[in-house]
Length: 385
Image (tube, rainbow, N blue to C red):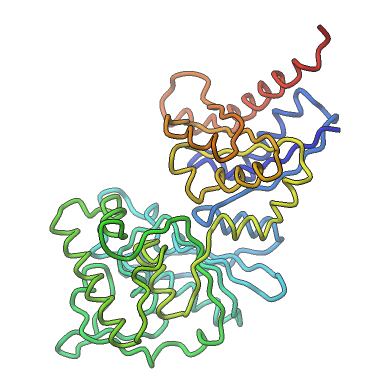
């Protein structure tokens, strides 16, 4: 019996990873019926959708919390996952409280946004007795270096006049001193891991401001200069106060520098998002047992080759010499590098020219039909001459 492993990421704004698995299976079974064995492992890479993927896979639960919004003007509902491994673990997706998708396009302003709400999610989990944390760093609307998160956990930031200042991207420049003694002491009894899929440092030409701030609303050079100068001042004060430097560590620039803040204030470790998810879901074992693997995501491009779901699966498929088929809404020219990593073939699921909204609405049906057609092609070789 042919064994299929279905391990797609979510198709952004169209399907969750779980829904994509169902569509793939439906398409394959249109051709094969019950003549095949199918294993579903919905995937994520530490970004959007990671919490739901891990909660579903481990039969955990979602905890809803009221936190501050990105500007600390009002309260919003956010959530995090709680899973039971050897010990209770909180899976916190920073984008739930501090994410870009929480804002309208015209509201984006990294001078004013803060990770304070993410800190409140951590504090809620502390109050529930949780001492092991995985924080996923993706989709942020912030550029505050994690200072807002630290403030929510009790760290105080002062200006030159000894006034306490509220943390956001624009106020980092005004920090003159930091009082860490007031941090919630429970964090020292905890284990923090931050899952990210980028390797950017905090500062410089490859840093968080230069590479990511424009998509968050930093549309002018003067705004970007203010953000970079603020992060530099913040980094200097941290070094003077705490005697540690993480600004050059790969991944410190993730989520507007939240990767830096988690290392500094929570003694956290940065880990690969795709490796985290793969290990928790026993992906390597599943690949070794399958005959053919299907994966996919909304847009397959050059970025898919760097720490994303498809590249992570491709590397394992290459080791075990298993064919890997990738499906995507869009497949760009620079995606060809994935063939070298271990992808066997790539298929676009969009059957005809259409407006984006229609493509997103029809995503599940289109993925199902694409997998059905792939299965029909695979059946050709079985037909007699």
